[in-house]
Length: 282
Image (cartoon, rainbow, N blue to C red; front, side, top):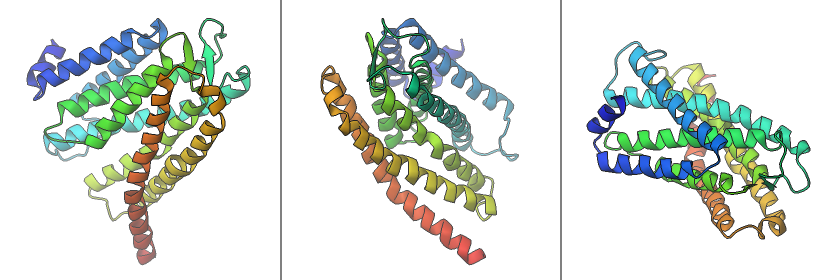
C-alpha cells in the first residue's frame, strides 16, 4: 500500500517504475549475499527516511517548505551513509594484509575464504543499496530539486559497483578502499548546510564545518584520488588481462575524478571565503 501511494503521488511515475525495474533486475543478477545486502540497505534507508519524515527527529523547530524538509531528510541519510562508508573503508584497508598475491585486485569467488574481501563485498553492497534509494529519491523529487550531477554520479557508481561484484570474480578490491574513503568529506558538507538552514551561517561552527569540508574534500577526492589513479596505472599489467568491461570501470573511475575536479573549483572558492571570514572575525 505504501509503495502504491508512493508511485501514485510521484510526478515521474513511468520513469520511477522503470528505474525500480532496472535496479531490481541488475541486483537480482548478483550472488544471494550481495543481493540481500543491497535490498536490505535500500529498505533500511527508505524506512529511516520515513521515520524521520513522520517524527521530524533532528529537524529544525520551525516548519520549512515541503521541498526543503525533504532535502533535509535526504541529507541526514547521506550523512549517516557517509559515516558508515568511511568506517567501512578503514576496515577494507585493514583487509589488505590478509589477501593472497594479487588478491587486492581480483579474487575468484569459488576459491576465496570467508574472511577474504568480506568487508569490501559488504560495504560495496551497502553503498549500492544507498545509491539505489537516493537515485529514486532524486527522480521522485526532480521537479523540486533537480540535481543532474548527483544523478550522473549515482548512475556512474551504480554501474561500476554492480559490475565489480557480479560474476565469478570480485574485481578492484584495492581501489574500492580509497574510493570509499572519499566519503570522509560528506558529513561536513551536510553539517554546514544544516547550519545555513538553521540560521547559523555566521556562527563559529559553520566556519569550522566549512573549513573541514574543504580540507577533507581536497585531501580525499583530489590528492588521495590522484595517488589512487597512479596506483591503478602501476598495476595495469594485472587489470589489462581482465574482461573488457573493466575498461569501462577504469573510464568511470576517471570520470569520477573529473567530477571531483569540477566540484573542487567551487570548494576552493568556499574555502577561501571561510578563511577570509575567519580572519575578519578574529
